[in-house]
Image (cartoon, rainbow, N blue to C red; front, side, top):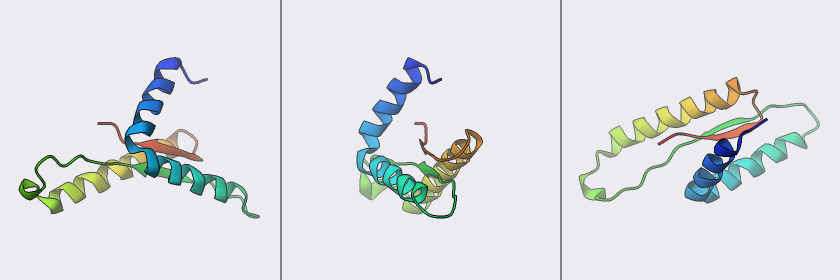
Length: 88
């Protein structure tokens, strides 16, 4: 049972990451229709660049990959077959 606060947080994150979440959920549903049984756990992370020229793109990429990886493992620990957006 998901509480109302968790649902509200998910809705806010889904709005923020919109297309990425929708695409990930579509991918999950495609796997559910596959003849073999798969579980799919997807982690999503994103960033807003205010001053792109001042951004260390390598460090940002590493942070985003790490955040997406942690989100994916959170999805796996929650039972899989879900999309998890990284906090923050």
